[in-house]
Length: 230
Image 1 (cartoon, rainbow, N blue to C red):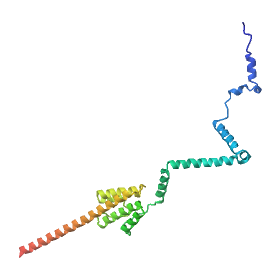
Image 2: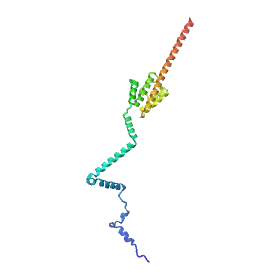
Image 3: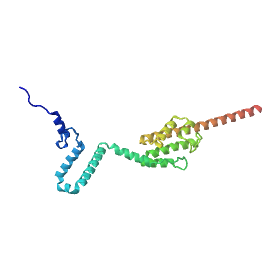
C-alpha cells in the first residue's frame, strides 16, 4: 500500500518563520538561572512563613535580618571550631602594642625591675632586662665597649663566649623578631647571665691573683738583688 502522506517542507518552513506560532522558542536558551530558582524558592518559603507581612513591604527587611544572622552564625561557628584564631588575634595586638625603644644599661635597677617583670609574667621584659644587665656587667669589667648605637652582634664579636652568643640570639628574636617570649626563654637568659657574671668574677680574681704573684716576684727579686750587693 502506497503512503499518501506527503510532507510539504516549503509550507513548514513558512510557518516556522511566523512569530505567532512560536516554533523557535524550543531552540532558545532560558534566562532563568539556578540563582533565580533558588531566590524564587526562598521567596516562596518566606511568603508561607510571614504571609501578608512579607508581601506588604517587609520582604527586604526580613531578607537582610536573615542574612545578618546567617553571617553571624558562620563567624561564630568558625571561631568556636578554631579558637586559636582568637589567640592569634590577641597575640598580633600585643605585638602591635609593644614599641621598641632605645635600650640603655644605665639608670636601671636591674634586679628590682626583673623581679617586677617576672611577677606580672612579662617574660619579654625579663629577657630584655636580663640581657641588658649582662651587657652592663661586661662593660663594667671592660670586656666590651658599650655604645647605644652598637648592635648585639658587635658585642658578641668583642666578647666571644657561648653563653653571650646564646643570650644574644634569644634577645634578638624576642626584641626585634617579634617572637613570643616564654618563661623557659626567660629562665635560659637568667642562666646565661649567671654564668657570664660568674666568669667575670673568676677572671677578675685570676687577674688579681696574677698581679699579686707578679708583685711578690718583683719584691723577691729586688730583695735578692739588694742582698747580693751587700
